[in-house]
Image 1 (spheres, helix red, strand yellow):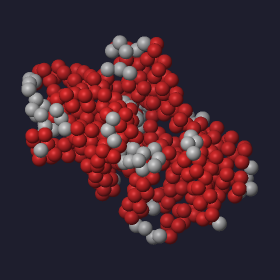
Image 2: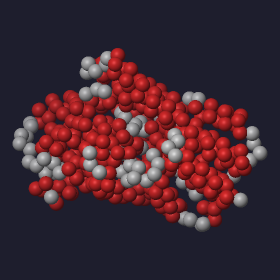
Image 3: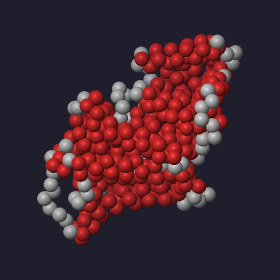
Image 4: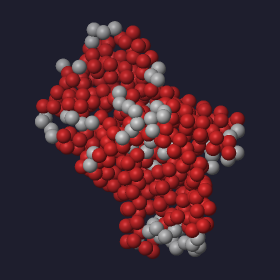
Length: 432
């Protein structure tokens, strides 16, 4: 009976998604089918209460604020200023300006929260310049595709907020937990660029002028706005001064001040950023509401308990469970976006993860890194779609360029499992 119910629900979900129905509405529809056909519970009031509860969560308030902050900064000169501040320091590093993709993505990720926004913003800044100077397209596009996924991992992160709400985990601690793994991934990407450049010295163009230390320090003043904003958002969270929601409000005010200081704050940009954030948040909120109702329906059907029992009966060791889940999420990521993966699977998998003794903060960071991989895997790789729109290249070609970055993310997952302190050390030292 359980197998029949599962097949019916999976089939209904696949059919509705294939028909082009919005993901949130598809989730609500499948949940309604499951409860109506297979449980005695009245569907109407359960759906109303669950969707209202999921939509009115105070914790979720941080999400639209961080999205709005990213939308404001997207309309400023912040990305151009980052390039001008970073480039002078990279002239003597193997790979030279290729590192602007990685460092630019790392910095912008800390004020964005979105992988696609990081890819688009940093790409607009770096790709034309790298192409003009003769850097190889494979490395320019590959490093950007990989490094821009840091928008998911380095806080503030939209997907971390979604996971925190779904798993009932502290979002502030999740944010702090993502810092060291994010820097680890950035270091792995930069290390790869250095090694590749040393092996292919003729592929990296020679730079004409070498700036003095004083000139480089003067150029670094362009980095001050983004560094101050990062300090304002993450510093208030780490010291315990503000919750994630309050820090999001600090970020919005800081973004508005930066836009005003750059002369980019007009009524038009304010309106466009607010509407852009509203559209993005409404899409995410609908998915979350649908997923909450589906989770409730699955609870009544007993599917999470049966799945957890089945996985438990396999007798998997902890590392085998982590490996199986990594492969499961990677395959799922070929067809769904990261937020959908989180909200579709957590209701089923969290009891099993907790039973295996896996820390939920660590699991959240592990999940984000694996979802990052999905951003650069076809057919549904969102960073690849962004790059395709910017360059006109085929998705398969871009995926090939990004393949080394995928391999480095796999290495990062291994390191995080071998050294879980990379995730847990900072959250344990948070104030409050």
